[in-house]
Length: 79
Image (tube, one colour):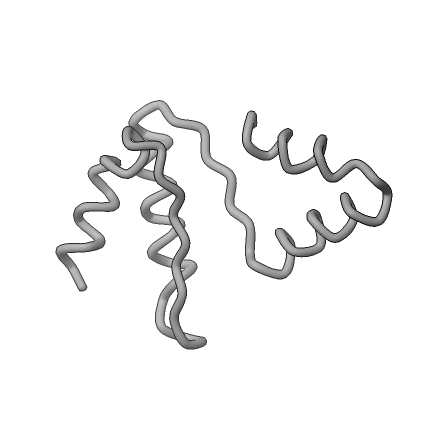
């Protein structure tokens, strides 16, 4: 929905400190939309980190395994 994309590009969700999670079927443009929103956020002076679901899951799983679960996710939040 173009109105939703326009709202995201405006960055209001960042000011509200909301997270952005995009869920859709394969091939529906999730990465394209998220990259466009992230690029616009960078242009507005924000720092951006992009994680695919599998990568984020691996980070949290590794943190649980090596008993650093409180440090690794906290580092993601601070970065």
